[in-house]
Every structure is written in C-alpha cells, then in structure tokens.
Image (cartoon, rainbow, N blue to C red; front, side, top):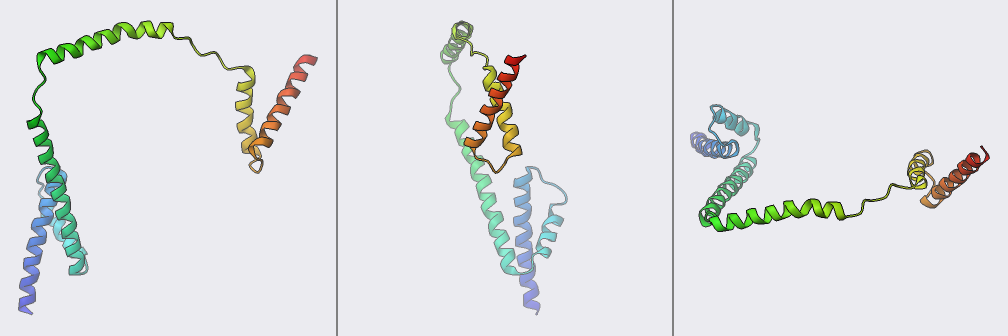
Length: 158
C-alpha cells in the first residue's frame, strides 16, 4: 500500500505540473489558483486512464500553443521592414484609387426602382407562403397572379 501512495503522489505532482503549465499557456499569465484548479481536476477524474487521457490532451494543447508562438516569432524575424520606395508606391496606388473611385461611381448607371408588380409579388408571396404551407411554389405564384389581376380590375373600375 505504501508503494501505491508514493506512485499516486508522483502521478499527482506530474499532473499538477502539467495542468499548471497548461493553464498558464492557455490564460497567458500565471494565476494564484491554478494549482487548486488542477487539484480539483485530478480529484474529479475517476480513473488513472482518464487522468492520463487528460494529461495527453493538455500536452498536445501546450505543444500546439508553443509551436504557434515560435511560428509567429519566426515569421516576424524572417520578414524585414518594407522599404521607403515600396511604401511610396503603395501610397501612390492608394491616391490613384481615391481619384478614380468617384469618377467610376458617377459613370455607372443606377439600378431602376422595382416595378409595382415585383413589390406586390414579394409581399404577397411570403404572406401566402406562411398561410398556406402545404402549397407548392407554382400554386402560390398562381394565387399571387390572381390577386394582382383582381386588384388591377378593382383599381380600373374605380
């Protein structure tokens, strides 16, 4: 029994170190309650198999976070600052776009307003679709067309 308790303590210490490192990399800053948080996680897990699975998960997450940090550092080290001529070219391109932007906008034709029928169709179609869920699209279109024609006849008679 004494040997098992010693093994438990070694496993617990390893787990606590792994968990605190995981929480530090996850949250970014060391916090006071991380050891207690790791201890409650250790006590909540019923078997050693579960504890090992959690430790492997945390190790993968730590490795992923640390590798992404090194990739970011390597990226910034490998890319030098842009030269002054490159920046000037980008500014010139931006100025050209500001000049041509309004001219292009003025010369493009505006979209026409929608026809009265298309407005009526859209409103009526969705109302009928809600009322008559069992009808298919073709039947609803026919109903909209009938309503449009009946409304036109009423307007013409007035």
